[in-house]
Amino acid sequence: MGVALPEFIEGVRIAAGFLSPEVWSDGRDQSPDEMARSLQLADIWLTPAAVKNFSADDFVSLPPDERERLSEAVTQFRAVAGTVPPDAPASQAQVAEALPHFLTILEVLRPYLADPDAIAVRRAIWRACYGHRGWIPSFDFRLDEDSDGAPAVWVWFIINPGADVRSRAVQLQLFEIRNEIRKNFAEAGIRRHLYGSVWGRDEVAPMVLGGGRA
Image 1 (cartoon, rainbow, N blue to C red):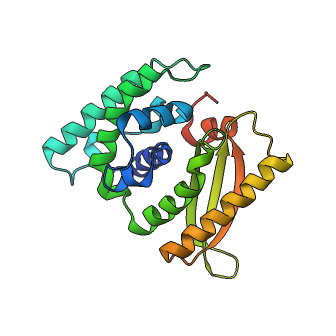
Image 2 (cartoon, rainbow, N blue to C red):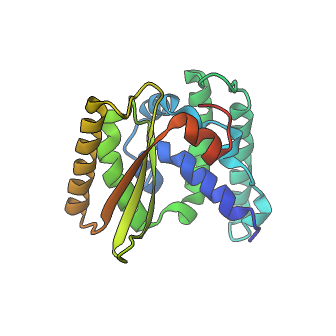
């Protein structure tokens, strides 16, 4: 295993956070058109940095045909991502062109990404945030323990510019989203404490994906 492999997997995992958990786990839930629309809203994912550090030689456990399939998908994805201006959002056409290649990457990498516990948590958070994608286009999370040693989930809500997190309206919506996540956790049998914080999309793009676009 090459030393860059974990970084490549992490970049894909973060970029894939703009897709529903069902797409991660079994490729269902959203139509290609719906995915393209939601991904255009959250266009941080469409950057060459999402697949940085890729080397086909790292995937020695994959059959040769799957390794070639992954390499081709990464090459095609990079080609499209490289056409997106650094100071403008991706177009619907660019998203639609890049999406099939990104889904192929996810399909080949599913054994590396599809942790059942993480997918269950992602599904619960996704359901709570889905109706708020206009100002929360994505989120990330980490499974860990809190200071008392209890199982916990740390969630980072990524918000679009223009959403004033200090306003009462946004605070009320965040309160409702957190309560909905706790409800979804309970229904799914997820016994973890929830901790949340808010990040601006312009903060996350360069820090997480290494890109320059907000």
